[in-house]
Length: 108
Image (cartoon, rainbow, N blue to C red):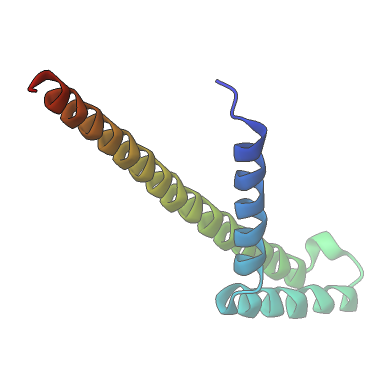
């Protein structure tokens, strides 16, 4: 099923908006700050892969990406549910309006 271009654009705009909001959120900013500190300490050692600071940076980076992806997923889920409820509500409203109109037309 292909979505019409206007719906694809609306979905992309929502994704961009939520990505920006999540990216600048306080929790992710804190984690990114810790990640940046851990990354900066990497250059103190010679063998980065063997350096415990590398492991610390890598762990924090993975956590920050996990938070970002979780937030995007949850927002997408909420948006999807909201869209579904809205479409179902509209469909039910149209259906009840059509039935009411048919009833009044049938009984002169």
